[in-house]
Length: 200
Ligand code: PCA
Image 1 (tube, rainbow, N blue to C red):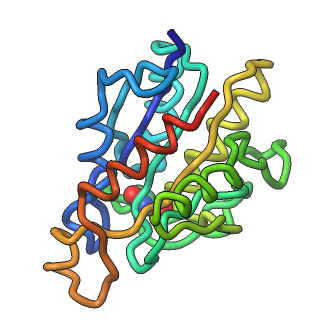
Image 2 (image 1 turned 45 degrees about the vertical axis):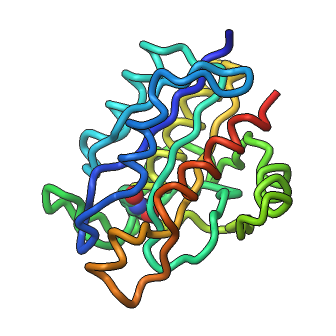
């Protein structure tokens, strides 16, 4: 059976709940489609997140990697098209602030997702879940981990498919952040299951 590493993130900034943490925990150990899922939660820390993600990669030796992150304010599930070689913006959970910082000094400007992102959007829409490809994963931890994982895979000549999916807030989070569009945790989780099911 193939293995899929599914990661979520802990809460960060003003978001006191991270629905991706719950999804990673809930799907851990499940067999979905062709994959046994290993669900893990990553810290929101520039000094730790990539190290932890690579440790997990080495441990699991996955055939596919899906990193999940919360995009508070988005109303659709958004598979990311590309990660860019830049970190910038808000402080991480330890107070580290990066500005215009290269993720890999000698790395390429960007890496395209190797997940079937168009198929993902189609599968979700066919099942009445709003979805759209996103052309920017931002410059915070989500872009950072996506870039790092794709760089690692490329550098080590692995054929693992990998990428990132941003998801909207859950209703639980929206109770605390009323201006943020939200989905039920159940729909968020079911939509990620559908995407895993759709993988070869
Ligand atoms: N979302 C953030 C980092 C952690 C998360 O869930 C992001 O979009 O970068």
